[in-house]
Length: 64
Image 1 (cartoon, helix red, strand yellow):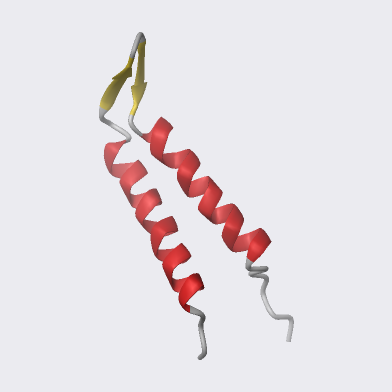
Image 2 (cartoon, helix red, strand yellow; image 1 turned 135 degrees about the horizontal axis):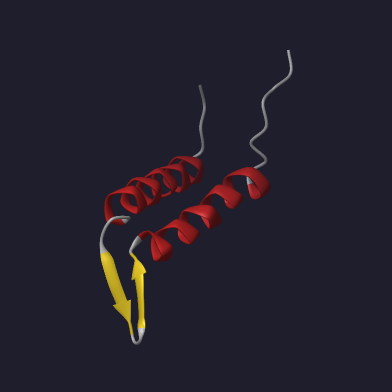
């Protein structure tokens, strides 16, 4: 199976962001006066990479 290097890198970053969001989701961080769960910062980044995977790289199932 021939897979581009960009696909592997973006997929790795996407999975890393999802795992990190789950790990730091229970941690509380403070940004000035705001006190938020850590996943509030990490999860939107994973959403961006998921959007790149679906929209830019056009990952759709191949109908047989």
